Image 1 (tube, rainbow, N blue to C red):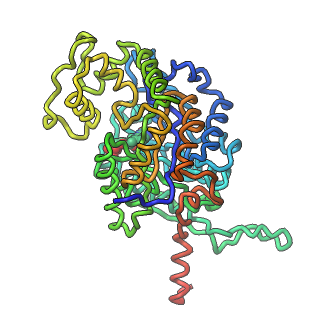
Image 2: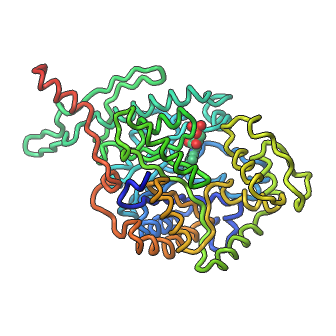
Image 3: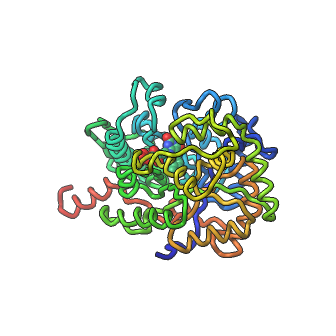
Length: 454
Ligand SMILES: Cc1cc2nc3c(=O)[nH]c(=O)nc-3n(C[C@H](O)[C@H](O)[C@H](O)COP(=O)(O)O)c2cc1C
């Protein structure tokens, strides 16, 4: 499979995954609640012609005591409020918010996303997640998180309801004619009247149809149900392959699921995450990598690695070998964390210290430490080989890592014709090469008209 797109898409993660990224001299952890910080971060990404500014989210604090005391990602602003503020200080970049379908109601989520889409002139995107753990459940009146199957059933219905609510008003429903006094065209208003197993939502929604018709839908499920949700309704899927071969396999897997939903292979963009440490020279990149590795407090690094392993290794000597790992067939395959650890342990003979320093970057996701040319080579290879339609850039530290990407790597990618040098006109949906979805009620009306029923 070869590349399917004219250009590579780019998404910016606003949090680094590196355990000690916040300690880097070019990081600004003290600005975590400062709007000006996010403003300049988003504007930097926009200068680099990024397609998406992505805000991940979870609805609890689940970190260990050590992680709470020594890492920073357990604190974060609520994505929709942050992105609404950023819509006022950016012009072109897509604004992607994570919203859980397990601990929200579709009416609220659809209305908030429609609001962001209007305020940003059609730049809203929704990272649809189902949440992952009991700590989140405990913040919403439940002791246990929904089981996997029911949370995906709920998610599917949630997205259907949201899409229906966005269509309640047809496009052009508001003549707002002062002379005649006619504000809205009543014929262009529809009641959803949804009654399903999880939601009962009458509608209509009290907001005009979003400029994109439907905000861009993103999903990142890796289970069978998650992949089907992406294939049936998402515009973009976030993946986390570790190697090019895995990237191609995941890409083909997602693309092959689309036909069953009457969708073409171009209707779902696959964007792997990539963790980057960028240096002007190989020596500078290696120096940065070493600096970040040294900033990981050993007991914190070991604690995080123990979490990935599922057993405590804090008693073992740091400069000794890794312990024997459970046989790869004996644990649940969905534990991709342990799978990644086992793969690295089989490939390289690392001490515990060396291992946690690698694990601290991004839990062994796809990563590159290198020069702009080396990074462009690798991203280009993935793109040309049909492993990616674009990438989520996970910076080693923020905002420095994204600033380096924009000033050093983007020009290299632009020189090679791999990424855009200017934004195209139109909404985010149009920029990504997608059509505005037809309004379901307009379609129904057109059919009824044709059959003489209206
Ligand atoms: C790049 C990426 C970003 C994700 N962001 C979030 C997030 O912000 N919040 C969240 O609760 N889950 C997030 N997830 C988890 C996924 O939504 C999903 O639960 C996970 O990939 C497991 O897949 P499954 O639910 O299909 O088993 C993310 C996953 C990936 C790969």
